[in-house]
Structures are given as structure tokens and as C-alpha cells.
Length: 116
Length: 115
Image 1: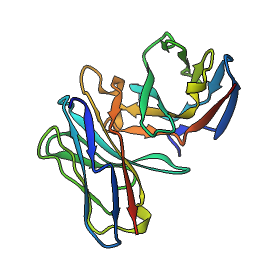
Image 2: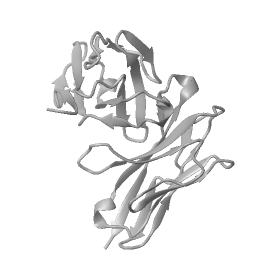
Image 3: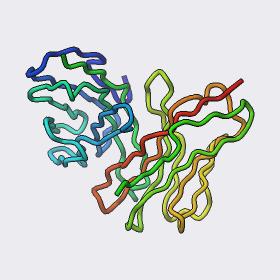
């Protein structure tokens, strides 16, 4: 399917377990982003990537790991899940071009993660 | 300091009326973009409208317009002729060239359209 997809859509895990959230886009967008959304905080950037093999920390990177070996994939790993990581996670992608700050981002449908 | 500030946690508007959702931003960059996204109760994030820092005209997209006041660093979203389907969370965001082109989001405004 064209666009940006996330899997799984729903996940329940236990404290201390490793969890990987997948993100795949078919547009060949250069930029990809991971956000978490919590009530009262809006969207907070976890990590982002400007291109394959280039990643940067966002506002709340602690406890998360990312990789980007291929342009189309940007997995997010919680190495040892904690209850505070219960959240809705959104992946997004964006073009870069004549003026990257002019490009919007397009969001995946989100993954609801519950850490027990 | 907050990069994006949305001071209205919740707003109500009568159907068919216009409503303005406030957004102020903080940047020292000359090149930046301002964006509005809608999040209905179903949860998806939908891009609505964009304004570039160099654009002299206010952006418009159908019933959405962006009231851009650069000197005041405000980028308010105006929705004309509100519809019941406009009930949603609305997020203002900024993208700066000099901070790696990442996005900064406000905390959102919940809009309820009353029949």
C-alpha cells in the first residue's frame, strides 16, 4: 500500500521487555520522525532522521533507540519498556527539497502501546 | 522557552460560525514554516495548511486560512463556516531550518462545534 504504515497498531507488553515499533513509507521521503502523544503534552519528538544512516535526538529520546538502514524504514525500539512509555506513538515522513522547512510531514496511523 | 504556544485548551463554536485558534511561536531563524494539523477523535493526524516565513500573503485552503503576523510571531488558524465535522484537536507546529528541520508542536486546542 502506498503511504506510511505503522505496525503493530496496538501492543501490550510488560515492564522490562524490549519492544520494536515499525514504520514504513513508500514515498522515498528523506525525513522520518517518531513522536509520542500524551494527554496535556501534545506531540513530542523522540528521534528523527534526515536520511538513511543519519539520526538525531529529539526532545524525549531517553529509553528509545532508532535505526535507519533503509530510506523507507525507521523502526523505534524500547530497549526495556517502562510504564511511563505507555503512549500513542506516531511515525511521520517528509520531503526535503528546495526549502525543507517548507515541507509538511505526513503521519502514520499511530501505535497504541500499553506497558503493564 | 516553548517554541509553539497554544493558549486555548478548549474552544466552542456554533455551527456555520467562524472561529480563530491561536498560535504563537518563538524562533530566531529567518527560514521557517508554520503548519496546522487536525486530529479527529479517530486519532489520525491530518495536515491542513502551511505558511512559510517568507510568504507575504496569508495562506488559504478552502475554509481554512492562516492569519500570519510575523512581527507578532503569531500564526492563527481561522476556520470559516464551521461544520460538525470540524470538532477535533488542532495542533500548530513550526519547522526551522537551523535546528535540523525538526518540527515543534503546541499542546493543541480542542474545538467543539455546537449544532
